[in-house]
Image 1 (cartoon, rainbow, N blue to C red):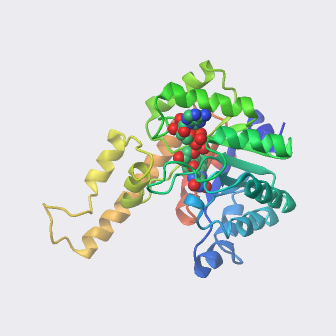
Image 2: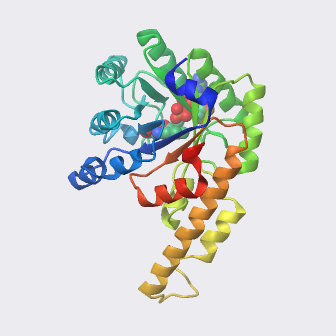
Length: 308
Ligand code: FAD
C-alpha cells in the first residue's frame, strides 16, 4: 500500500492543488521565500499536486513546482495527460519524475484542445495510461485517476463512465480524485453506484472554493457542464455584477462591495459543502488552492479540515 492510500485508510487526507505559474512574478509569488507555497505548508497538507498544462501547454514549470513541494516536505503528486504524448515521451517524462523523487502521478486523458477529436498522442484514454504506467514502471508510482460524479461531459452514459472508472482500478489505479461537483444529491448517488460497481478505491474529493462569480461560472460551464445548485445560483443572483439591465451604470464602489459580499457568501457555501462531503464516506479533501493563500487559509480554518 502506498503512503497516500495508507493515510486514506486510517483517516481523511487533506491536500492542495497548484498550477505552474506562467510568469516570473507568478513564480516568485508561489515559490519565493515566504511565498504562497511556504504559507500553504504551514497547514501541513498530506500532499500537494501540480497540474499538467491543458492541451500539453505550460508544462515547463510543473517539475520545478513539484521539486519545491518535495523540498518543503510535502508529498508531490504530478498530474499527467495523454495529450500529444507518444509512448516514448511518456516513458521519458515519467522517468524524469522518478529521477526527481516524484512517485505519485494523477493519470489523465487530458482535456482535448478546442477542435481536436482525439489526444493527438499514442494513448486515447486514461485507462490506457494507467495500464502503460504499470507495465513500464511496475509499482514505482502511486496512481491516482479522475472520477466525475456528474459523469464526464463527453461520456455516453453515467454507467459507461463508471465502467471505465472500474477499468482504471482493474489496470492498477490506487485512488480517485474527483472533478468539481456542487450537486450533493448526485454525488451521493454516484458514491453508491461506484461502490455497487465494485470500485473500492478511496475517493479524494476535489473542492473548488467559491470565491468569485466569474471564475465560479467559468469553472462550472467552460468545460465540465457542472450543475450549479439553487443555493449557489441564489448567491450569484444576489450579487450579480455582469451586464445588468436593471443597473446599467452601476458604480465601481457598488461592484467592489458586491464582490466582497460574494466572497463571504461563497466561503460560507464552500464550508457547508465540505461538511456535507465529510459525511459521505470519502477519504480525503483536495482543495483547488488556485495558487492563493489567504482565502484558502480561511476556508481551512472555518471548516476545520486540517485537524481531520
Ligand atoms: P478518461 O477517463 O479517459 O475519460 C474521457 C472520456 O472518455 C469520458 O467521457 C469517458 O467516459 C470516456 N472513456 C474512458 N475510457 C474509455 C474507453 N476505454 N472507451 C471509450 N470511452 C472511454 N486536465 C489537464 O489537461 N491537466 C490537468 O492537470 C488536469 N487535472 C485534473 C485534475 C482532476 C482532479 C480532474 C478531475 C481533472 C483534471 N483534468 C486535467 C481534466 C481531465 O483531463 C479532463 O476531465 C479530461 O477531459 C478527461 O480526463 P479523464 O482522465 O477523466 O479521461
